[in-house]
Image (cartoon, rainbow, N blue to C red):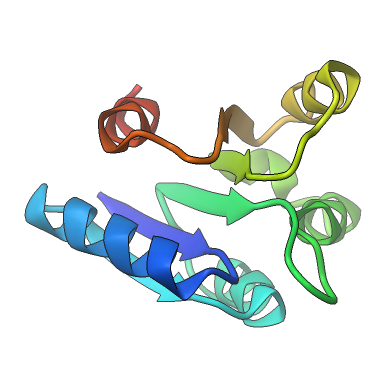
Amino acid sequence: MKVLHIDDNQDITNLFSEFLKNKGVDIKVTNDPRKGLELIKQEKYDVVLLDIHMPGFYGTDIIQSLENEKILKEQQIIIFSGADLTSNQITSLLKKDGIKSHLKKPVPLNDLFTAIFN
């Protein structure tokens, strides 16, 4: 399984990366959301772990760019955020083709693993 993790918090990407590598997952990480968008366009991932609130370029900007380029529905994106999203915002995101699920930070590692493999 090939996973891309896009999150501005390096501590989280380090933790998730180590955990998933130990589970046999091939994971690529970036703390730069714009670079993450380019990586999605360049390479196919089984799952994209996407933080919503990042400085300067949000996860929602990535989703919108993928939607505009008609490649969102080809993705399996798990969105997560430490910020409070309203239930309407979460519901709206989950209705989009390509958005697999939403997890709220802090994400228990076992919940992350379950979300990736379901």
